[in-house]
Amino acid sequence: MNAASLRPKPRGRSMRAIPVMSLALLLASPAAFSQVGFDSGRDLLASCEDPAHLPECTQYIAGVLDAHAYDLSRFGSPRDFCIPEDLTMEELERVVVKWLKAHPEKLRVTAANLVVLALSDAFKCKGDRD
Image (cartoon, rainbow, N blue to C red; front, side):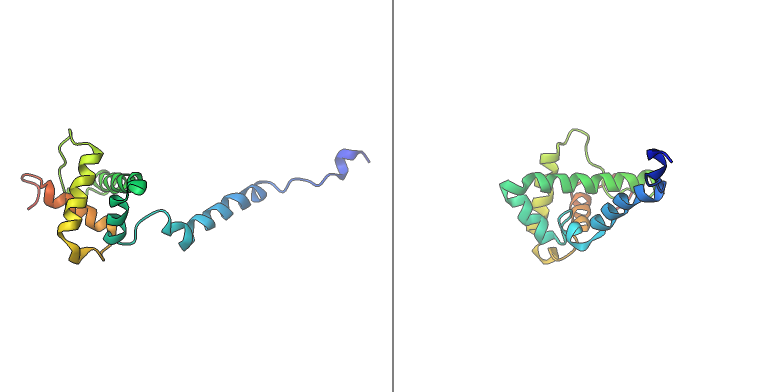
């Protein structure tokens, strides 16, 4: 017998899957999810009004825009809003914050839904939908 025959044999791909599965379970946990998104419009507004958390606000709005674009391309969903190409993310963030402040009765609604509503009100598509 040589030293190589005494070493444990690798178990193949199943051992490599354990770290991947552990990471997936961690990311799926409620604690991890709560740090990724906003539960309500109230949470989003608070983040957008806090200079220390403004990047999170802007990135969240960008994520909603990306999800909307994906729905359009993948599922043929109707366009909810038509944003002019020359607007910046900072301008879009101001539009969303202004809308949230103007509709305090809706702040309990999911933040992503309110972003879509704010952008739909501000940037109606001509001829697509009313």
